[in-house]
Length: 504
Ligand code: AMP
Image (cartoon, rainbow, N blue to C red; front, side, top):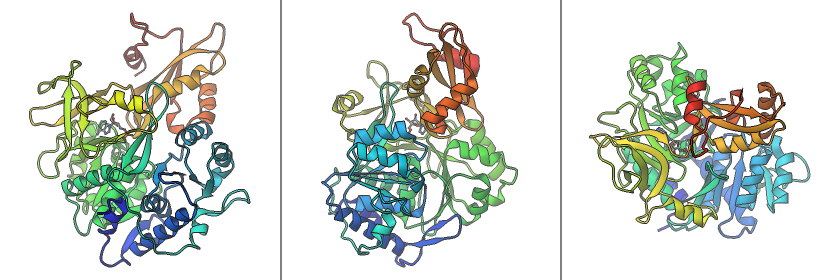
């Protein structure tokens, strides 16, 4: 059997290929036939480049149906997709391109200048803008080149263990790591989610999440593909647009920030949600207050689930049965989730410990980091998630913290260490600590605490301005506090909990 993920999705297309696959926010329709032909053309283009087996195809492009086709065509042609956040700047892109050495890079026309310098310097052979070409130095836009290729393509045979994608997830110590996900990992997970969330005929997904992250790509878009369901695509989350489109949809997925913003809009009411069957939340903790307010306003209980780039989805509150606020539900079918103490023994009910997981959805390792991979797995094959939690007596998991010190702001992961190292390089800075402060909209707001060198005067505005030039906006601290010294414990470790209390 061909385990290529595209073949699985293809088997789920509706009978009438002229049905709508994606409707865009501005009223364009793409049919399932467009998807089949479009991915064939792009896959033929990739095949014509004579890329070595296992080549990575990296894409930093704005969300669009065509961008999703580039992903599906990559998988269909048997290559490995590497999605990159559109907010990444030169420094970040240099790292990913250097680390993953993609054979092909697809970027937006606006970024062609600087991306091309980085890509060609790091050995990328083929650089495309997704749409219109910019100048003679690129290979022409991907879509215009693909247009000359045949619109049929025999989906390449893949085994379950062959790689389909690499998702970069940063670590607190050192740089980002590429989580290698196979066709089998992604197929296993979406089969389970499809069943568990009772995807059904007639479902329409309102897709407001980004496509470069696991949530928007492997949970939301895969769910609709697995069900042969239409998606309505918003280029990004926008409260007004969501409220406008919800009445024609049955499924909505978001990060907690989306739900907070919807509740802050007086126009968001029960009527807007009348047609919705399922609201899903994940990627960051959903506050009990948001869960309760949402139920009071709309009559819907949000279904919260838990997962991560390395493992896809792990636990979910039930479709039928009790959805408990403040929990992420029991382990999904086929996924083994355990909470262990420092000695590696299973914790009792309500006892807090490290969350470890195993299952067909769990990745095989970090790209070209065998040692790091070995460190993150136990002897009996469980992946150490870095999250800390506890099970209640009903088997529902609650996540209480993160041993890896990650900040989640508006659903995006921010790793303090990365920002601290950029701040520490600034003139006049002695050292810094970056923390997450509870924030009503973002969940957590990135906040920096900085110590100046003797005699230097530091300005909050100047530090923020300088960071904006260097790192993606979502990582830039909302506030910078200048202090005389950082609080430390006897082992010399900065006490971030003290800082969180002081500046929270
Ligand atoms: P990512 O790889 O970007 O999906 O981030 C994964 C991390 O997000 C997990 O390790 C958790 O720390 C966090 N996360 C995901 N879903 C939830 C949730 N429902 N509640 C709390 N934290 C979550």
